[in-house]
Amino acid sequence: MSAFQSVSGKGQPAATEAYDVVVVGAGFAGMYMLHRLRGQGLSARVYEQGGDVGGTWYWNRYPGARCDVESMQYSYSFDDELQQEWDWSERYAPQPEILKYAGHVADRYQLRSDIQFNTRVDRAVFDDNAKSWSVATSDGKTVTARYVALATGCLSNARVPDIKGLAGFKGKVYHTGHWPHEPVDFTGQRVAVIGTGSSGIQAVPVIAEQASHLTVFQRTANFSIPARNAALTAEEREAFRKKYPEIRRFAREEARNGIYTELPDRGALDDGDNERRAKYEARWNRGGLTFMAAYNNLALDKAANDTAADFVRDKIAEIVEDPQTAKLLQPNNHPIGSKRICIDTDYFATFNRPNVTLADIKSDPIQEILPHAVRTAGREIEVDALVLATGFDAMTGSVAKIDIRGRHGQTLNQKWAEGPRTYLGLMSAGFPNLFIITGPGSPSVLSNMIVSIEQHVDWITDCIAWMRDRGLDSMEAKQDAEDKWVSHVNEVAQGTLYPQANSWYMGANIPGKPQIFMPYIGGVGVYRQICNDVAAKGYEGFNMEAAEPLKRAAS
Ligand code: NA7
Image 1 (cartoon, rainbow, N blue to C red):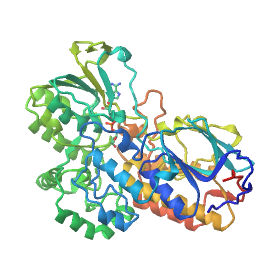
Image 2: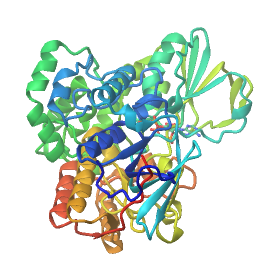
Image 3: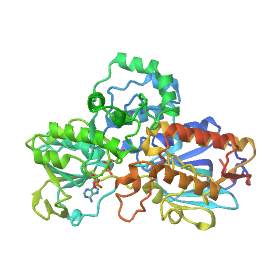
Image 4: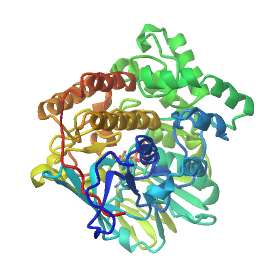
């Protein structure tokens, strides 16, 4: 059954296939979107460039890859049976297990029949008369859809840096975000890892165990907290599951970042030195992202932030035996947490191994990749394999790869040339019926992604159903609502320490990309309330209207 009236009958030639919704991407967002759309009786086609579901977990197969949010929380909450039946093996499940979970969800809800794999969406053009989208895919086909939902992921456009000579390297080159599906064995090899963000920090200790020698090329030292990963016992899982109603409620409604933890009631400077150190010590020993929740002003007040940053710098100095290496590993050019904080297993201790060297490319930059070496100004380091842990064109990169044309032929790339502009991170004026799941202007990457994905998918599908009930099928963000939201997102960000770092949140990792703080930092609970209020007021800030029935192909 479809929400929209089919106007072509059986036996007539099929011009194009028509769907209520085309969904781009079959990661956690695309899969849940499909499930909800089906539940609303809507027809949907999902296109996925990978060979299976999983999105970021399909591509990021590098050694040591794990989510930095604990698995019991980095999992769907929409179906209690699902969360009660799935057994996570570890506090932070490894990538293959997260991918297996994605596959389990696809099987359980029989999603794959509506997903076309190995297919990219190349182009989406809005027809202002029909109020529908024409979507062209890499298999040479074009379909029509009333709505398009971009479930393209925030970290899926792997960025290969423009380093001279890279193409001429004779060994193997890997990117952490585009890792081969076959096992990679570095045994006996001299390996270079370039990049020390989350991916590099997770991969380095694992690669170090295999490689004959590992050189880590660091441009910016990063703050990292021990994950304290461990196997989960059946009792721990059970205790967690019993508390799920409260954990999920808290994550959705109260947490800033969609993660269950105690909310601090005081700032870092409200405690004396000893008390503060004890609190940091407890959080360090517990491990994980909630280190940053030790106090309520670490993201806001530089002096408060310095106390946490100093604590971590001291820890690095305690762990790393060589004082010169320890000093280089101590981050000193950004507040802690203003770049995505990393979660590691033995990252700093890895530099005590005799087969691991840190190369500081801030003071001695890479000048060229030679056929068998990395050459900096000062030296040549021979390597057999290169691992690029150089990150992503985050948040906008995957959207920018699609030629999206809205009203009057304007492309989304033209509109976003000075930085992404959205209303609530959900829609962009001039692009009717185009939804973005966890897009710029929403909490997105500042949160537990699955919490934000579920919230967006629920909001979008409820909205489509609401319109359908009223005979409406075209929706567009109003320009003034969008302008106000963009100002609000900027204003909230400017009130924090985040813009002080050259982070991918700011687009700073991509040469030439406009530097704007992209995610909404007001907190997932606050944001959810704003979205709910907008819906309760009849989708305030959006124009809605009725459209002609969608022309459907014969079935
Ligand atoms: P990130 O966090 O963007 O890290 C990329 C790293 O690569 C970072 O250390 C960069 O240094 C470095 N980099 C990037 N380009 C270069 C060049 N040209 N030369 C040397 N070093 C370079 O990506 P990740 O994949 O680690 O993590 C992304 C997110 O995935 C993470 O935050 C989690 O949310 C999961 P820089 O800091 O720019 O100086």
